[in-house]
Amino acid sequence: MTSPHLAHAYRDCRRIAAEHGRTYFLATRLLEPERRPAVHALYAFARMVDDIVDGAGAATRTEASAAQLDRIEHDLRGYLADAPTTFSTAAEARILIALADTIQRYSIAPEHFWVFLDSMRMDIPGSPNYRDRYPTMTALTEYMRGSAAAIGLQLLPVLGTVVPVEEAEPAAAALGEAFQLTNFLRDIAEDLDRGRIYLPQDELAAFGVHDELLTHCRESGRTDQRVRRALAHLIAVNRGIYRLATPGITLLTPRVRPAIHTAATLYSGILDEIERTDYAVFTRRAVVPQHRRLRVAARELALATAQRAAAN
Image (cartoon, rainbow, N blue to C red; front, side, top):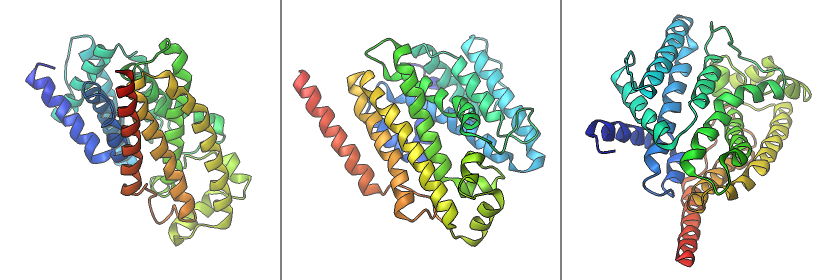
C-alpha cells in the first residue's frame, strides 16, 4: 500500500468500520496489523451496499438504488480488470479501490461479490427478484447464501487457513449465516418499518404469529407471548448454527482465531441480550454491553499473547 491514493482509500474503510461496526471493529483489533485493512475494506463495501439498499424504502428511490448497485458492480469489475471507468461517487470509488486491491492481494474469488450483490438486489422493491417475505427457512437460507455466507467466504482468504481453503468454506459460510440470522432477530422492528420480514413465515405461523400481529407489536411496543415463543424457537435455531460454525475456527490460521472467536462470542451474545430484555425487540435494539465486549476481547487477547509466547 505505497500509493497515497490507496492508503487514503483504506483509511476511509477503517473509519467506516470503526463508526458502524463496533463489535466487528473490536474483533478486528485482535488481528495482525497487516490483515486489518483488508477486513476493513470488506466491511466498508458491505456497509456501503447495505446503506444503498436500506435507502430503497421509498418507491421513488427504488429505481435509483438498483441502478446504483449496477454502477458499483460495473466499477468493481473494471477495477479488477485494470480498466476502471468510474460512475460511482468519489466516496464509493475509494471503497472500491481498496476492495479491488484486497481481492487481488488475497486472491478472493470475485464470484462471492456478485452473489452478494444479487442477494442485495432482492431487497430493492421493483427489482425482478425482490422479496419482502420468506416462506420457509430454506428460502431464507438461499437469500443468506449471498447476503451472509458469501461474506464469510470473502473473509476466508484474508484470515488464512491451516487446511485447503475449500475445507474451511462450509464453516465460514455457516458463521456468516449465524451472524445474519442474529441481525434479523435483533432488527425485526427496523425491518418491519421497511416493509420486510426476514424470519421464515411457516415457523412463525407454527406459533400463531402473522404479519398483523408483528405490526401490532411494533405499534404498541409490546411483545405478544406468541411472538416470544417464536423468537425463543428461532434463537435456539440460531444457536444451533453457531454450534455448527464455531468448530471451523480451528481451521483458521492460529493468530486470527482469537479475533473470530471474539466476533462469534459477542455476536451470539446479542441473543442473550434479547432474552435478558424479555424479547423487547420492538422497542430497543439489543446490544452487548461495552464492559462485556471489552472483557471478552481482553480475554482473547491474553490467550493469543500466551499462545504466541509459548510458540516462541
